[in-house]
Length: 211
Ligand code: HEC
Image (cartoon, rainbow, N blue to C red; front, side, top):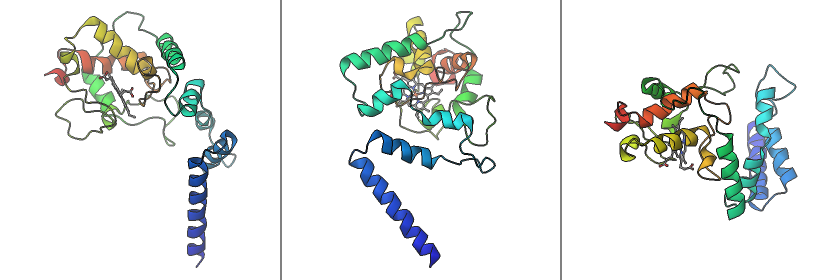
């Protein structure tokens, strides 16, 4: 009996928050729902979300702009977002944008990092295959992003394409204002070395992606 009561209470809750959001809830109401959903992801910490999680509940300006315009910013706002994202890109000190594609493949396959049970500061993966086809030999991939098979070959391995690829991975909003791809460098998910490695996975002539 209790279970039924709890289940219907939960259903009612889901139904009301769903309706409220669909009807265009106030920003304050949305904030409240978000904050309460993540109040205690760590049962060892009854005070609430761990600091690294709590910080992720606050939207930065780019996320706010894209949420508020439902990913359709005005032309001027879109240009501003893209320019800011471009300016955020940090390039390797040695000027070499291509790292080790073998390591890049491992990073592209690796979905670890930034989860509840991952230690803060340990290297994360890029989880690229979750959204992209990359090496055609890998059969498990997602389709949220376009296929990246033969990526370098299709771009004639040109230097400006290498640079554009590095920039896209470092900060995906450098090409599309409200991109759906994570900002790997700008958000500190991948290091510069790791970004060089995944850039090589896509752009190195020797990478199996281009065979
Ligand atoms: C959550 C899904 C997601 C993940 C994870 C993801 N991407 Fe993407 N990616 C996208 C989407 C969606 C696009 C299409 C354009 C956009 O929204 O930015 C894209 C576009 C790209 C492009 C540009 C493609 C083109 O034709 O211009 C490259 C290059 C790219 N991704 C590389 C990567 C790499 C490398 C990784 C892993 C380090 C990665 N992506 C992880 C979703 C993702």
